[in-house]
View 1 (cartoon, rainbow, N blue to C red):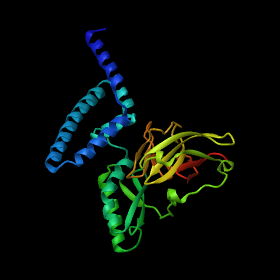
View 2 (cartoon, rainbow, N blue to C red):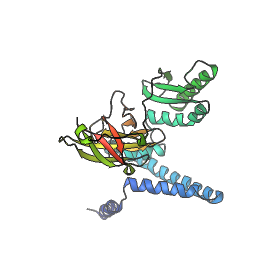
View 3 (cartoon, rainbow, N blue to C red):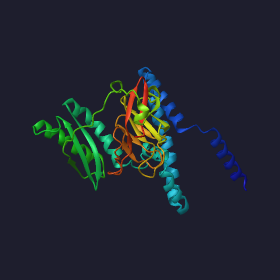
View 4 (cartoon, rainbow, N blue to C red):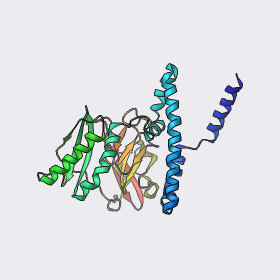
Length: 304
């Protein structure tokens, strides 16, 4: 072993021993963003410029690494494996090195037009993308026959076609009844929950807004289940803790509170966080479980 190789091995070992978790890093970023937002204008402008400069250096370094790896046959295969890692894919997407998946791109575009839709009493839901066609469902004032509704529908189509390279057209789906989202405080449990297959899962305070909590539950009848409870805008949903793709656990799934989505940390499959519908592979579905709230505790039914 050469001195250079030994030094590289020692450096790699040191990194492994001191490397913080992704959650820790994300928490530090969130804390820093809040701190910067609280600064006065001159200081905030300096902080923003520093951020842009540091990100520019990081992007230049990442681009150099990617180019060199793509030029080497053995390294190219490793590069493709790395891109499958959710954190690496997120990093490359943030720096514009790879394109995010079409659903993510389209939802970002809709975030830009949604305020204009909502100002007219309307909204839009992206259902799926297939063969270059974005299927959307329009709500409120967008779903009508007046000239204003036609204008809003055209706004959605123009934004998606112009903003997402893989989308060539938009198709509006018929309006369907929205699932009822019941406030946590409105749900109560019967006098003998165990007989009905209900299991006390966790305190509701353990499931923060925009987060999830996992638990291993055993019903009175012996039924067992690994579950996750997801909180989107103070509405709870419970699912079997298995991704519909390969059955891997979703304990560390990433939740986008703005778009109401849950993304598997293993292979990036994206779900509607309140219904469990898979947005990456239409037809797939998380297994949703009945959920109730009583006296500040979440109960999930896993038995009959």
